[in-house]
Length: 272
Image (cartoon, rainbow, N blue to C red; front, side, top):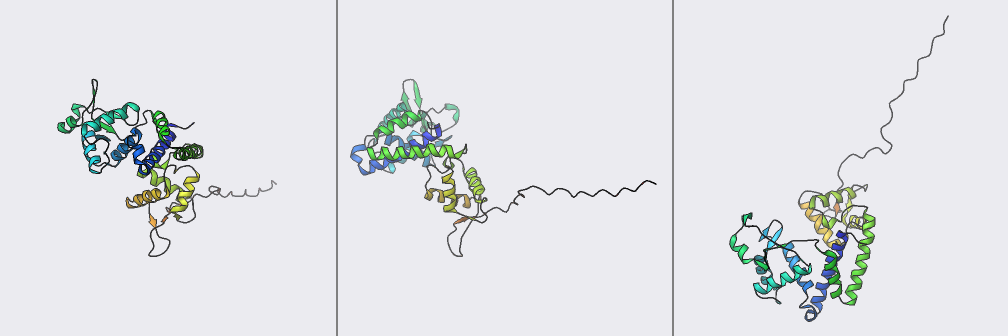
């Protein structure tokens, strides 16, 4: 049985497999609601404008996805809103309301309105665990046999990794500071500066890089270096930095501090 976080990891993997299958056979998956929801979530994650409290307004989202050619199945804003609402009902993504008191542009709020009965939504939440297992089940049903088998293998790895992590989070779910701190801790276990590939293998053995490829891990390590959170150095002069520098913290003596010397007792004088 997977945890909620593990189920979310498998759902992300399954949606990526579904997107890959869509590229291979677009005629088969053109109308897939799961693929649509995955593309919307990916666009919201990458957005830098039209955001409000970690969510994105529907109208700017439509313009951004239309400009990148991702909405051939719903070319109008009305069609896009209708499909968002269907995906929301199925639990593939989450729509939320914007209160008038939030102080945002009223024109954007009006243009983004998605009506469902007496409720009006305006924003798409960046990520939600709402009905994760139901969304995962529906996504698995849409996968062809080979992609389904690959997702099953990944789910088994997620389960095994959850046992090996011993309560530590997956690195893909933490922020930059937490990621850098964990990488530094593992690097400090070595007697010398640790190669990035070796760090990745060590963290993979401990189940902490589930859902993160070596290429992505390199990018995150590079970003942590650029932010000054860790230090990268090159193995040889003129080469690309490929090692995480150990911190210069003093290692404790494994057997503790030596005891204070005991002064021998002075000899006792005989009584006469």
